[in-house]
Image 1 (cartoon, rainbow, N blue to C red):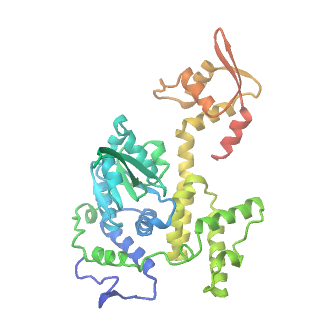
Image 2: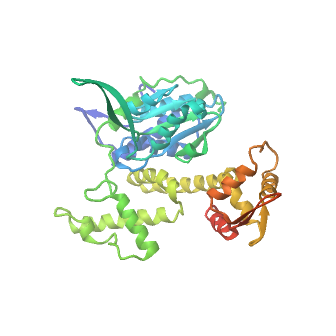
Image 3: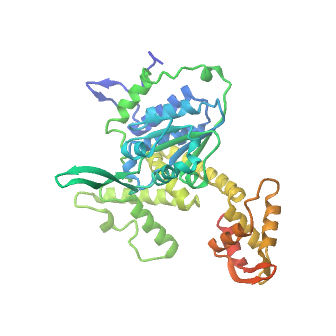
Amino acid sequence: MTGEKKFFEDEDGIISELDGKNYLEKAYLQIREILSYYLDIDESNKTIMALWVLGTYNHEDFITFPLLFLNAMRGSAKSRTVRLLTKLSKDGQMLMNITEAVLFRSHGTLGIDEFEGLASKEKQSLRELLNSSYKKGSIVKRMRKKKTMEGEQQVEEIFNAYRPVILANIWGIEEVLSDRCITVVLEKSNKPEFVKLMEDYDSDDKINTLLLLLKSDKCSLCSVVTKKNINIYTKWNEYIKNKCCKTTLNTLYTYNTLTTQTTPEEEIKKINEELMDLFNRVYDLDINGRNLELYFPLFMVARDIGDYVFQEILDIAANNVNVKKIDDMMESSDITLYNLVASCDDGKMYKVKDLVNTIKLMLGEGDFSFINNKWMGRGLKRLNLVLEKRRLAEGIEVRLNVEKAKEKLEMFK
C-alpha cells in the first residue's frame, strides 16, 4: 500500500479537506477501503464494521453501544478481523485470555478472540460484566485493602463497565450475551489475494493516515446528534409519545425545547426537519426494544456521513433483525412454550407430563432430556401462563392462559 495516494494530505500539521466531502464521510470510505484490502467480506458487513469503528470514537455520546460479535469457522480470518478492527478503533487492544480485572480496570476498545471458555461456571462474573458493557452507567464495585493510620481497611472502588467490545469465536455465544451483540458471520475465503496477505497494519500508510484523522476532532458527530441543548434520546422519546399516545408533550417543532439565545430561527427549522426525517425513517423499520438500542448508534453515525449510508444501514438492520426473529422463534424455549400453550384449548385442564411429551414432539430429534415436569412447571410459572392448578394422584394438571400466549406470539411475528 506504500506509495499509493492517500485519502488525506498533511499540510502544516492540519489534515486538508478533499473533494468537498465531510471528514466523517472520508474516514468512513477509507475504513471500507482498508477492510476491502485485507478482508474478503460482503458489503453489508463492511458497512456495519465501518460504522461501528467510527462509533467507538463517539462512544460516550450514546447511552448504549452494541458489542460486535464475529462468528466464523476455523480459517475464516476471524483473528485477523479482530486485530484489524481493534487497530482502527479508539484505543483498541486485542486479548486472547480476558479476566475481570482487565475488563473493568482498562479502557478503550477491547477485542476478545477465541472466548469459548466464557461458557464455564467459573467465568460467570466475567459474563455478567460483558453483558453490562453495552449500556452507559453500568458500574462495577470492588473492595480493596488500603493501609491507613488506623490500620488496614477495606475501601470501595468503582469502575465503569461501559466500553466498545469485539467478541469472536467459532461455536457461538449464549443467548443473553448474543442479545447485546450485532453479529457478523465471516465465511472462509479461498482467494489468494486475501489468504496470502500479511497483516502489515503498523506500517500501512493508509491505516496510519486514517488513525491521524480519527484521533483529531474532525470526525466527531457534528449534526443533530450532538448539537448543543439537544438530547437525541429525549427527542426520540417525545416523538414516540406524540406519535403513539397522542400526548400533549412538546413537539419537535417547539422552539422553547430546541432554541437558545444564539441559535437562529433558520437553524432551528433545519434541525427540526432533520430530526423528523430521521425519526420517521427509523420508526418505519418497526425495530423495537434492545434491537433498537443496539442499532441506534450506527444510525446516528450513518446519518452524519450521508443519506446513502443511512439508508443502507436501515436496510441492513431491518434484514438482520428479521432473521434474528426467525432464529429466536426456532431456538428460544420461551417462544416454544408460547407456541405450545397457543395450540391448546382454552378452558381445558392439561396434565403437565402430557405437555412435556407434546413439546418434545414439537422440537423433533435431539437430546431434550432436560425437559421434564419441573422444567415445564417453572417455565409456565415464569411466563405467567397458568390460570388454574390442581394436584391429582396421577400428577399436576393446569388450565393455561391461551389468549396470553397467542398475544405474546404476535410480538415475534
